[in-house]
Structure formats: C-alpha cells, structure tokens
Length: 273
Image (cartoon, rainbow, N blue to C red; front, top):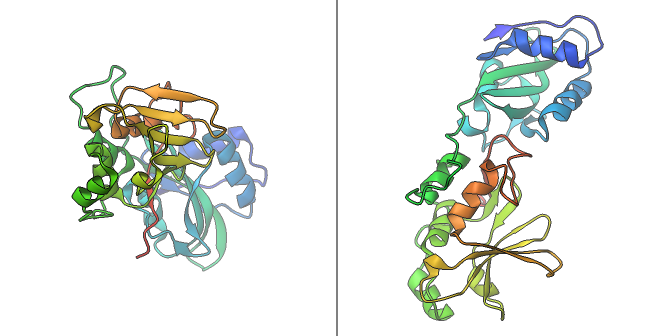
C-alpha cells in the first residue's frame, strides 16, 4: 500500500481528485493531517459515488464483509480502523473514515483498493445462461446454503401446484434476506397465493410486489409480474425469477434497475448466527 498526504483544511473536488490519483488505481491509503473533517470527506465522496456501505463502525467490523464487499480496504489498518465507509467505482474500492495511526491518535483516512469487476451480462439475453449461478456470481455469495432441506414435495402438495425451479433454488441457496438491501426474498410465497393467481415471491422498500403469475402447467414458464404498491399497475416480464433478479442490478435499461444506484451488489442474510 502506498501512502499520501493532503495539506490544508479545505477539501475541494479538485483536491479530492488529486488525492485519489496519488493513492493510485491499485491501492493506497493516507492519514490526513488535522483536516479535512471526515464528515466533509464522506459527504464529498457520497455525492460522487452514492450511498456507501459501512465496513467498520465504532471499531467493530461488519462480519459479512468479504472480498465482494470491500475487504481489501481493511488490510492496511488491521484492527486500527474506527469507522470506515466504502464505495465501489469500476475497478476500485474507495473508502473514507477514521483510523488510529502508529501513535494511537484517531485521524481521518481515505483508502483505495483494487476491485474485481463482475463479468457483465450480455446486452442480448443468452438463452443458455445459468441464471441461478450467475446470481451467485453477481452477489459474491459464497456462504453455505441458507435454507437447505426444504420439503418442497409437501409444500407443493399443500399448494396444489409445483413451484418454479429457479425460485426454489434461490430460497435454498440464499435463505431469508435481501438483494442490495432492497429486494426482499419472500421465503414462502405459497402463503400469498392471491385470488388473481399471483404468487408474491419478493417485495421492496417501495412496497412494490414481485410475483409469478400461475399460468399453465409448467411453473418454469410462469411470467414475472411486478405489481405497483397502489395495485394500479402490472408489468409483465416473460422470464423466470433468477433471470429477472440478475438483470435488476446490472442492466441500466431494466425498468427496475439498481445499476444506477449501486456499482457492487450483495445479498444480506437475515439469518441469526
């Protein structure tokens, strides 16, 4: 890791550009002398890169942080990071916060680390793509199955119909949680089989409902339906759940894209360890 410094107390866009340039594209960090205030640094980076992820808060590291969530930024600080928030930008992780220097003083610090960029989805959909495995790749999910051993046979017998295979895979693999802390995966959509034939399989903070419409004998061909929070509009997508969720984070032309808000993607598990 290379180090840099910043003189003066005023942090401008030009000064930030210069600092990030000196930190380098592959990685670097700096203990800043006296100023700028870390809140000003965080605000300036947030205005440029969007909402950050908190890696360290009050000296405690988020236990879910891994290589797909900016763990490389923690390397130069060891256990000396006090607060650290991170952004993903192209092939770089960028962070700002405070850490203790060699003398034990808490000082503002920016950091940069190299980021492996997920392979982009093709613009033209690949009908042969394994969308379920692609979703693991996009989110960097490497943890054990979130809900193994679900008795799907008994569940489908109670429901009176089979369930889509990719949806079952998502539940088994990820378990309870949310994609990008936005799209909550409904664990038991069969409890929400509506009179209009919609199975609610996910929801968002905006209270839109993400469903599969029971239409025909082959559940893997049931379309995805997004119903607006006020029940006034349905958008229908001729694809499965995994493919739909894959495209939300990375396709800027998707009607419900997250690509404009996040440059890295993750799944937050709601399981209690």
